Picture 1 (tube, rainbow, N blue to C red):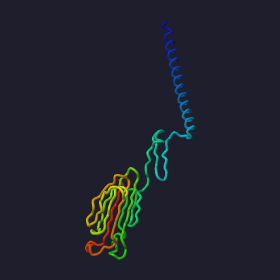
Picture 2: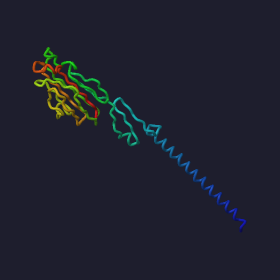
Picture 3: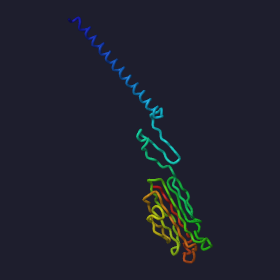
Picture 4: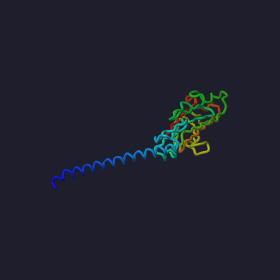
Length: 211
């Protein structure tokens, strides 16, 4: 009986080796079948890669993270702010903001009554959806009797961030509740004796920042 024990252990070891070989073969076959299924699925979808790539256009970048995100990814706006004006200047406009200022800045916006005529200027600023605009005045010398600057939270029909303002001190800054801001400047076109000589030239300037 003792003589048969080594043979028995050998048979057990052989059986274990065969079992491991069977399990290993089954694992590799399953893996190959999954890879083949994935390849067929990708072919049907019109792509040979499972890597999700960022899709970039002139205006937006779509950055998917999963297959579901390919259809639900948020649009990331790449546009720089836009600033249009009917008179005056929009300058130094970048992706983070810019500057608006009165006509002829840093010289007098009315030319001391030299025939420039009345001014009705409109500055329309727009940034990416979801962003807001902060306006900060850096210079402000506006004839107190007859000229005004007004800042609207959106378009000129929306609420005001700064009511019609004139004078010779910097107005407070303001932030919009949307991605649009409108600034209007109205002047009677004649900086005459009512404008203190010591404060001339009449001018104003403000920076806007994307927040």
